[in-house]
Length: 387
Image: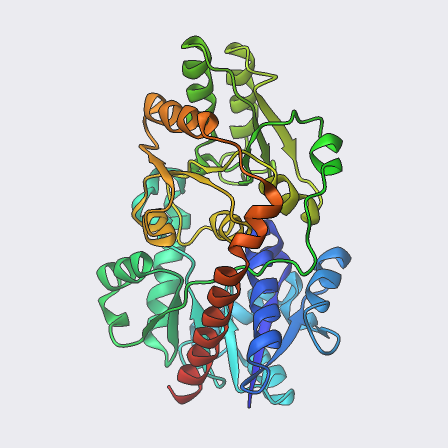
């Protein structure tokens, strides 16, 4: 059995999707591949208690306190990894706990890491949308990935689309990539709870857009689309939840709110902000459809969650969205409010689905995708251990 280390540092908390992804990895490994991979979770002192509890629920033991992952040690560790090719502090701790493979996400353990690494690269957004990143951020990302590829690590991507980018931008990765599309399980015993939409003041019919309020998530095209549809005679409601902070574009949410007010859409585009995790699936399940207008994705968590619930999808026509849904969605040009309006109106006009029937109808396919995800993830750890 492989002893696999997953790490969470303070900096990782900026990305809610990253925490959800890690939680899902831990969950499916324990449920389906416990005989092959034993996950161990190392947490930095800065990790909030709520996140610790969320992740600990997916383990067979408590997380391991890891001061070496803390902000105070980050500079020292990075210097060691860059100058010697080995993060000595991390290596000592991982070896002390008998780790066979470390899952490298948001960390860099050196080109000559003592413990084999499975490096997860979520996407190559900075290559496709450089205008959303500073020169320094793009340089650091590119340098970090080139250094990773000099070591004896396997690179894990979540889609064939992302793998194509990896081979294109980093040819040295050829022969060391593995594609592991993640899947999301249905919550056991889940049933529609109408009190959740009511709690958020939502009407009986609404679209749900659960993306963080980052600029590339492209909420603005949906705002503009709602105005186009209203002016053509169809009024609709979109509820949007997610983190309000875009550290790359701090004024983005204020700008979006100003545009909503200017178009008189305060009742049509509802900003819910951060909501309890358990509310997300309920709002998706009971929506007319889940909407993702993003300009870029590696493999969308919100889309995967909607698939597990049997929820209709209205998506930007990205190659990865088409790969992820195999054509089973309504697609639109993410740069065209008119095209987005047409897709929304089409979904709004469709016969309403019954949430309970959606759940039942999606259960078998969701379970199959989760088993496949767990198996591929375990395969990736075994491949990394042999690299």
